[in-house]
Image 1 (spheres, rainbow, N blue to C red):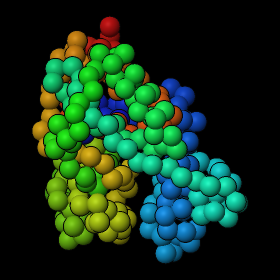
Image 2 (cartoon, helix red, strand yellow; image 1 turned 180 degrees about the horizontal axis):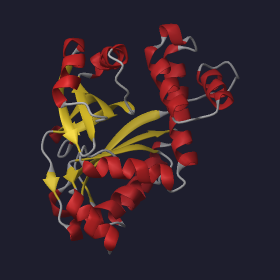
Image 3 (cartoon, rainbow, N blue to C red; image 1 turned 90 degrees about the horizontal axis):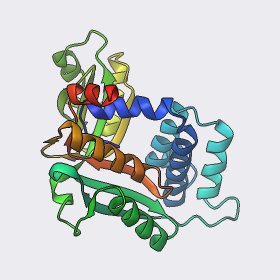
Image 4 (cartoon, rainbow, N blue to C red; image 1 turned 180 degrees about the vertical axis):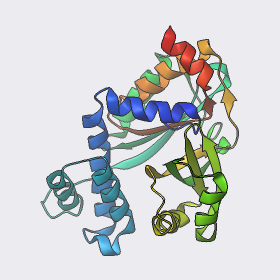
Amino acid sequence: MSGHSKWATTKHKKAILDGRRAKAFAKLIKQIEVAARAGGADMAGNPALELAVSKAKKTSVPNENIDRAVKRGAGLTGEVIDYTEIIYEARGPQGSALLIECLTDNKNRAASEVRLGITRNGGSVADPGSVAYQFARKGVISLPKNGLSEDDVLMAVLDAGADEVKEAGDSFEIHCEPTDLRAVVAALEEAGIEYETDEIEFVPSMQVQLDADAAAKFLKLAEALEELDDVQNVYSNADISAEVMAELEEA
C-alpha cells in the first residue's frame, strides 16, 4: 500500500514483521515473469527485468526462485505465462480514494475478489476514471535521513532528473518521471547515499487527512485488498498522521 504519508513507512515495516514474506515473494516473482515474457531473459537488454530482479534480491527472494521465474517468463520451460494488468478504482472512508493494481491470469476472478474486498470492508467501487485522475505515475525512491538534509539529497539527484525531494517521517522521498528512475538511483549510488526502495508508483496530487475512526476503517479496507493474490499494489491519497497512528496502536 502506498499513500506517501508517514503511514506508508509504518505499513512497510509492519508488512515485513507480520509474516507476509511469502506473499511479497509471490508478487515479486510475478513481476519477474511478466518482465521476462515481455522482453526476454537477457537482463542486459531488458531494463524492466533487471529492475524486477534487483527488487527481488533486495527483498531476499532466493536466487533459485528468481532464476526459475526468469526462465518460466521467457518461455524456456515450456510453461505459458499470460498475465493481464488491470486497475480498479474505489472510494474509502472520509472521501479517500484508492487505486488497486492487479496482475492476473483470470480477469473474472480478480474482478469478483476485488469487488468483494471493497464492499465487505466499508468501501465502494468507483466508476472508471473517477479516481484515477487524482494520481500520476511517478518514480519514487525512499531513503533514510541518516543525517542528510533535504538539500544534500536534492543536490545529488537534481541533474539526474529528480522532480522533488519530500520529507516522510524519518525518511526522504524522491519523486521523478518513471523514465528517469534508473538515472536517479545511479546518482544516489554515485554520491554514496543509501536508499531503501525504488518503485514506479501512482502518486496522489492531493492527500486526504483521516481521523482515527476513518483511519481504522481505511486500514481494514486496504489490508483486505492487499491480501488478495491478484493484487500487486494498493495506492491511496489517504494520509494518516503520526498522532492518529499512535492513537490506533494504543487502542
